[in-house]
Image (cartoon, rainbow, N blue to C red):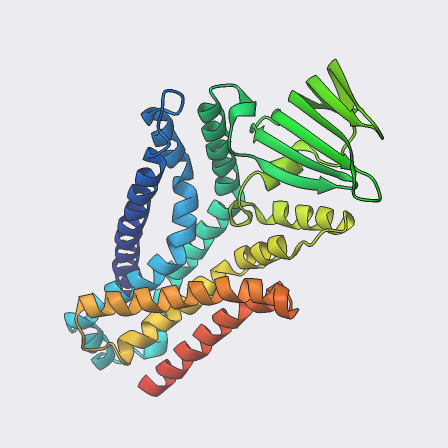
Length: 353
């Protein structure tokens, strides 16, 4: 039985990695075409390649569930087309036994997703965004069109670039009073974090008084803020590219500031439950092979897998914003598609058995 499990795992994993290679490769080509429009004397061809290479783990992580579904359909479909599954069933091997054999490589894929999402993607994605912003600004951060906005107490803060080492560039702060009138704005060329807070360099400050403005220039300023390099490394990238621990800490920070953390909590539950989503999609693929897709061509299986995978992803993407509008929890928005896939897979397997 161990040899049979190994054989099934090899067929499934090889198909998954081939599908993953194709999907990620196409996505990188489309992204390269999009980035090519921004190539100039500052943002060069080599900068684009470096940016795409750094984004590779993020793309693998994003497309792993879809590739698991389609790859499982293709791998098991090849076994079915060669009548190998029929021979297994004739030898007395039950569908449940075959399901367990397929779930073993699915577990490896789930572990791979967790490792990528928690330890690799957050670092490479921050490096990718920071390197692109610095390259496009040619070292002059105020010329960058990228950056992040954040609100803290009575201040609205924009930071152009956050480097992986915690250094920040192009820090613009707007402070408002209780009547929502701007009372102060400032721009700092750069800043570094110390034990006493941020030290900003080359600060230009404008004070808006009742009948005039006052402009000040200082070489250095100490800035007390709840933002730390760890939190900045969170907000500089997309929520889905953050670690589970980073999402949880930043969601708590937003709650303390009286801001809505639902976007980050949705990403948190999506990452926590992604292994369950992979298992659910693989179960659907297995049920299709023993059920409605038992005797169709490989092309038809791929099309069916892509449709199911896209419906699964779009349903999660739609339920996320709906959870904010309607008022149910982000956890429920993430769980509903997974539960539907699990019930669908179990229903079709029971019907096939």
